[in-house]
Image (cartoon, rainbow, N blue to C red):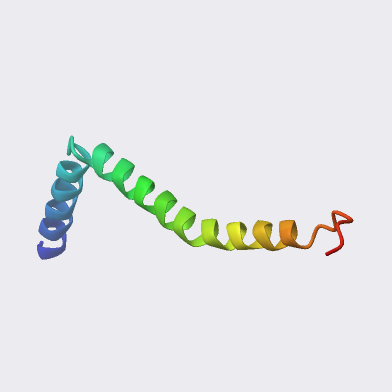
Length: 63
């Protein structure tokens, strides 16, 4: 009896959460946050790599 009651309560809570209108907005915000975090980490690495590669190009100019 207690197990059925608990299962019914959990099903009701799950159904209530699925009907939440703000969940889509929350998912979008979390997704954007993840993309920004990845960009913040990868951007400086790529910038440094490209800048070093550009410095290493031999233009044939002697000083």
